[in-house]
Length: 372
Image (cartoon, rainbow, N blue to C red; front, side, top):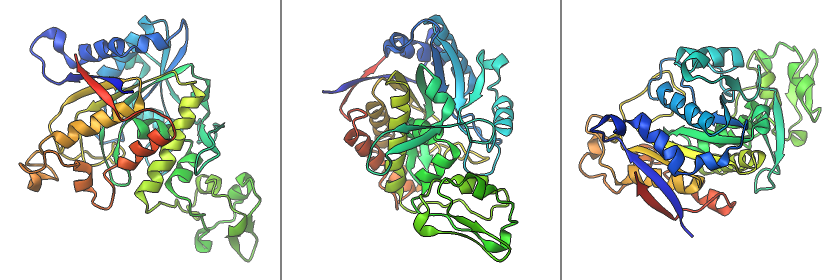
């Protein structure tokens, strides 16, 4: 059975056809208002952009979504979880300062911003999923107290997962910092002895007591390590480094399992929006934004995350590339080709995240596209 996916193009000739008004219309056409009860706490999951990045979804859209949720009886808030890497969204203080600097202040969007995994990434709740890799996933704790979620995702490229949209926004985005490490790699971490200052922070948070630090040496007992990532996020001197996975398909699968956990936490009360605009080669995490590789197309929305993702990928696949972009050499010959596979030939073009999402029961790839 196919899912219904709604689409609003970027074309506009009158005031009522602005993209902001189209987003409001999509909210109702897709039935998101039906997900919301009186005074429900509704999370808007959005990437707030890194400092210097300019491709993230603009706050004016977020404010319109806040308005629509509030009119439907809900109590909206914006959320995201802290990053694994040390940059401007590494802890809640820096994360909030970045969000506010990029225009996502409560005064601007008319809703509070709550970082899902707390001040230092340790507000964590485990949700049972029983999938291929994970029996349980480690989520930012606050999302597990929400009554529902609206994913507001920017559809764009990614050097590891080929593209990032709904699945990455929810799964990777709402994994706790240690959860992000578990998604990125199944390789157990190790300690660089020369950098270890023997502060014992990693020992304090290791659930398996498999870290040995004394006057003579510092090491992890590999056969006892479960790869939970707690030591990685505890080590301020970076003696225990982040382990990045080389396999794109492995990361995609683990990301889907985390998405499954988030949707279980909110009991399936979720709506999904992908902005297929500013489709840059890279995600919104770098402190820059490259030229988009295809023209802006519009907004895709629906209540099936797989169908929304597939529709977004299909739109980009069918588009021509922009001549002054990273794929400029493909101009005139790339329509019908997976742009993300062209950008990252070592990836599968992001297909595995969609395929695996179907396998674990998140939705269907079959859809009917209705343009508003």
